[in-house]
Amino acid sequence: MRETGPPGAEGGDDGPWVSSRPRAERARQLADVLRQRITSGAYEDGVLPGERELGAHLGASRNAVREALALLRNEGLISRKQGVGTTVVMPKYGHGLDRLAGLAETLTGHGAVTNEVRAARPVPAPPAAIAERLGLAPGEGAVYVERLRRLGGLPLSLDTTYLTADIGTPLLRCDLAHRDLFALIEETSGQRLGRAEVSVHAVNAGPDTAALLGVEAGAAVFAIERLTHLADGRPVDAESLHIRADRLALYATLHRGPAPKEA
Amino acid sequence: MRETGPPGAEGGDDGPWVSSRPRAERARQLADVLRQRITSGAYEDGVLPGERELGAHLGASRNAVREALALLRNEGLISRKQGVGTTVVMPKYGHGLDRLAGLAETLTGHGAVTNEVRAARPVPAPPAAIAERLGLAPGEGAVYVERLRRLGGLPLSLDTTYLTADIGTPLLRCDLAHRDLFALIEETSGQRLGRAEVSVHAVNAGPDTAALLGVEAGAAVFAIERLTHLADGRPVDAESLHIRADRLALYATLHRGPAPKEA
Image (cartoon, rainbow over the protein chains, first blue to last red):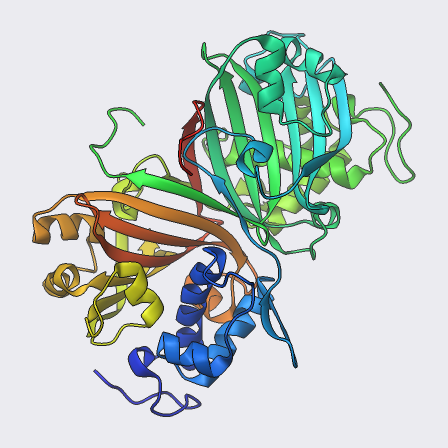
């Protein structure tokens, strides 16, 4: 099993990571293991062990550990400082994909979610593509809400949404700075929400989005489209969310089962 | 509702997109709408209408449309060529987060998934962090499989996984180049898979991952951790996946309901 390393790879203390692949690939594998540990809260106080100890625990050389940590630093997950060591930059929160919930609902207990309401207004003539998604009749208006969401004072996500006029108009009188739209919709309409179709993309943030979210242009962010329906099936809320991927991960528990009859 | 535009924003033909915000933000909003349309297959032949027609449909100026298309070109979603117009670079496939399925199962009908098997071997001493995830006894070995997956000949994802020895060893004699691990596990073990815990991250690809996936270093990719259990609850498959985000989106249908008793 043990093969000669490529030029530039270090010697014989790499344990199970040794292979014919370059050191960069072993660093990537190590980074995967470490990312999983860091984001699952394995280092409770946010301080990682030293390179030597990590190497022993992960069965890898100190050089490989150092390169893996460099990758994770580039992702914005950790910072490394002489004398301080390696620390987790900020906890990465989890947003569940198991049930439909607003961000504030999901993050209960993690700190206050506050929203900078950047826009909240009726839109007499929404774009045709939006009208189509919401199933609006020709000439029907909508309501537009845009919020920059912060958790613990730092930007977390930019949420822009079009709502049908009947559902959206009462929201304009609500406390949009502190409440989840989902909870407000259910309170003001007296109706339960039903399902939402969600699509999750990973994109490099454009300069405008990056500036709003407080990340570098080009940083990887989640771009999420979410179309939410009332319990009776009518679509009422067509959202686009941009979420800082260095602050949030998405979680789900999936179950094996027969393929659904229809997609 | 109609406000004066900021310096540099164009005049009065922006319909519902007019606001006090700079043009860059309107471009971002337009890009959101267009991304949703493109990735949901609204342009069946992969050719987008001209800027003027798009603007009319989306209620936006031609300048705003042009800037939105520039954002989407930077995401690698579209290409723009003089004389050819705006075309979708490649279809973005959907991987469902509703049930546990392998990539090949999900992409049935979209073309052949083939795998370059980069590693498939027993690992006598897996890293402690992996042993812990898989619940291995001290000294227990595992099996390591690494595959670069292609769809229609182009790289789609890099899958690295550690399997428990009892489940992984029989797989080493199987057709790992053409089959999903999930299906192979169920066939060789005679047991059904149960649940998987999945965490989804968006990261900027490091140079090594980028080279393998055929994207530029720094491109946004999905980094997914998936721990899969047999139906009896035992964890057997600890995976790290890196997936090209310009080729794949994740989809889910979420349902509103009471908050689960336990997170």
